[in-house]
Length: 197
Image 1 (cartoon, helix red, strand yellow):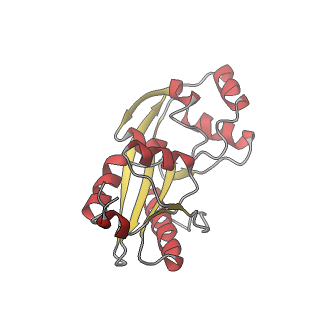
Image 2 (cartoon, helix red, strand yellow):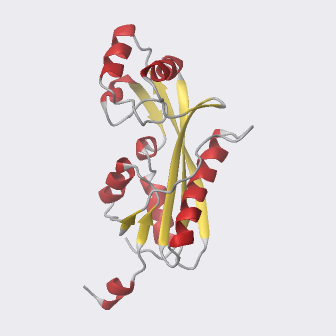
């Protein structure tokens, strides 16, 4: 290990998502620490999906930096929306069924907010948007999907990298964004802030 590697500030991922950790590893980025940020993730009155994704990512990074100054802090949040309507993480299979019925046969958008705070305290953020096109789901396809519990903990009640891949007719934009973290933009943000990949 070189002296420059020893003195490189830590990178902290302010997220509990195992998918984000796997995505970062895909581009050779291994956070030194994973510290999930405890924030209120509810939508604010009249808040649009893009605004919500960016706000939550920025808040996650900012609250984590309070206890860990001098580090790189990466915050991220993903919002699934049908028009202005935000489809959060379904709490029950009934709610998951409602979300999937809304998405069936339609286009929707996935917004990921990413926010990076540098060791010097400079915060930058951006939002990446991907359009996802669902096929029309039959009752049996929907029931089978809900039986496997993959919808749990997923925005919009589905995971594109899992069983729901068979429902996706197409996407326009970043695939990794739909999984949970837009890798091209995240890599550029890290490199642009002086964090060597």
